[in-house]
Length: 122
Image 1 (cartoon, rainbow, N blue to C red):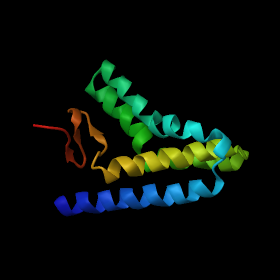
Image 2 (tube, helix red, strand yellow):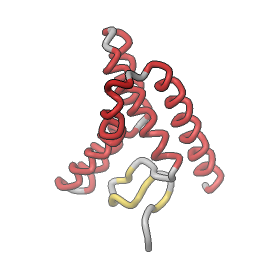
Image 3 (cartoon, rainbow, N blue to C red):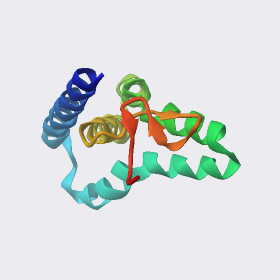
């Protein structure tokens, strides 16, 4: 299990770094101030925990899988909306960043329980 966690953290770091390199090539510096709030936007999904751990895990995981970022990115590419494309890149980078730090997808037993192990103290 520890080996798999290590590989997923390395994979997250690679996704995070790779997406940042791709994003840096096309990022509009005029809108650079939006980078930080857009990067952390997926974390707003924790508000679903107000409805309970099952709803919270479902909402959190829905926007923290790589597939969600890929879907947003694809919509941006297909519609020629470059800001949507950049948002997809940012969401992919966010998911990779979380995995790199050891934050996994949530289990419905509680916020601190993830597929990469328990997070936090205690």
